[in-house]
Length: 244
Image: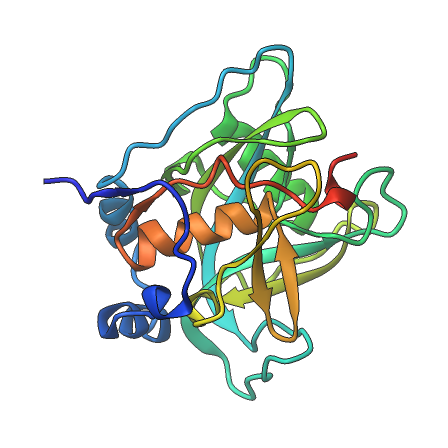
């Protein structure tokens, strides 16, 4: 039997507390690609019709946590950690759109490309991580942004990924977000903003936070891959600064 779907996030932190099994997964050595693929196959990703919107893809890349996220509020690891993490970037200050914001590697899908091909291409272009098609594990739910995109998130196996290099034209810095950080009791952060029908979703990161759409993908990764819950996220809104 498939897990019961959760239409939206729980309102109380007590309901989001991580199970001992989830904590073990988040702190143990990064499981192999087959284990993540098997977890993802329990869920059916939902696509969103483009209806005149542009189509983009992002890569949620499973890597080893290494020396940590290198962000305020999270410790730096003196020795290399093999615990699971996801790659995050800060967009370069010179970018025309959403400069300086947290992001996942990704971008617009070129003509003739699949979301998977676009995610792998952007991953190579942005952080110099060249992965084969076999590294793709599957998809999470599409998300439609206020700025006119439908984004398809692609889960990718990256392994240790020790030789990452930011493309200075697109990426200011590269960060390894520990999976354990997604299991914080104060995640997700939900609030209403004027003009939004649904709550705005954010995910805490150290002493800061990440906004949707990136936060929506991180939250669904947590729910599907760490906690085994079929939570949907496409209805969550973005902060007003991301509406442009």
